Image (tube, rainbow, N blue to C red; front, side):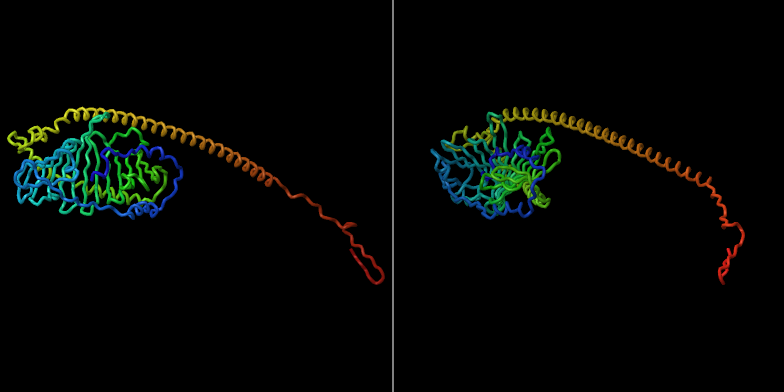
Length: 434
């Protein structure tokens, strides 16, 4: 599980901000084309985790056969020796105890319960790595590689102190569900992978919002075989509520548009990793319980291991004390940073609201101006219409008065030539009168 993600490998959401407005009309990618990126990764097949070969070493403090598990890496270290603070049975370590393995270059310890067979995979385990400042709680499933684990690594660097946590749940098929976080950063990273294709979700929504255009959540397709490099399609949500889709190729991001169904597909993967990891705390309680019980025994001042310096034996009792002061300082600095960010967020929100109010007032003023211009245009139009109606009425009235005053012209009857006399003319045998 150490290859899942480097503890400091938090996604840089800001890398999406520059491309968010890069395309006014992003190209459309169909659901099948978007899914093709996952299919290509899956086609390569996954490398199912293989159970390591069991190797054993005889503890230096035991005269009787009492083998404890070890690894080739430890056997190869200079001046390597092992100790077992517990009982023995059938030639193997047995019961609750602590396995201490030391060399010139490393010092690791494991609190666990052995059943006398040499294989304690299904038992709870608490591991301490004093060189790398890592402590982890592990509970194995019924078969390898099923396991639930929580590791915490303390890092005191130039940039300051921080404690990084990695919670992982692996099922019997090797599918892993991972949550990465830190004590003094608001960002959380969620991973779900079967070894061939992975889904990575980066959540920065817990940070105060100082920039409405900043990304706060990203869902990405990642390649587990290339150090979880983002490939294919990514969906990013911004503080202002906008959601943009991206296509990633050779590290370059391009705005695209994918169907809502593909976003639902990514959401289902995110919900799956949330559901699985939410049950991890209950599973890890067994490891935390055996730690409490063992420390009660080992740190009472009455226990020791033959051949092991007492300072090494009791190191587990005080090891965490060295981190109390830097942790407190880092916590105080983080709270100040958060408060500063909250104030910036409050100021930014107030400015945004003021700008929104100004924009609304300007819009209302423009609407009033538009309405006034519309009203004036309506009045002018109405005046022209009234004038036209008045002119038409005047013309109609004039026409009516003209019609009322009109008289038919007096026409004198046409008198035939010669007055009213009848004149008859006879030509031959024909007589004509008029």
